[in-house]
Image (cartoon, rainbow, N blue to C red; front, top):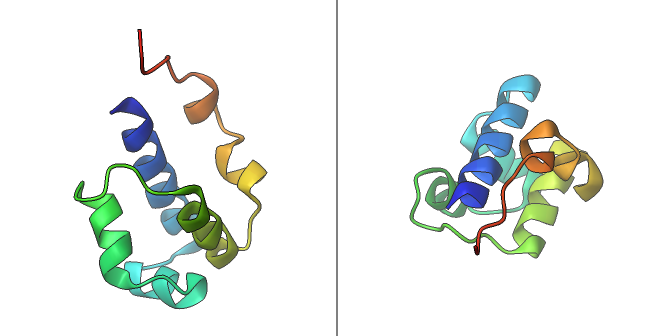
Length: 80
């Protein structure tokens, strides 16, 4: 569950940095607002890499930029 929270927090961080609402991100990324809300509100706890890539396209960043943060570098292993 920690990875899900990190992905969600990164999306929220980028929305804040770019002053994007959920609707603005949906428009820019080509993803339905309901899909983004499902990720942010916990109904979809395992967004696929294609969805994350589309979100990155909406933010105008690369996948590398999305994951290249301390948030992801310090994640613990999910399965122990």
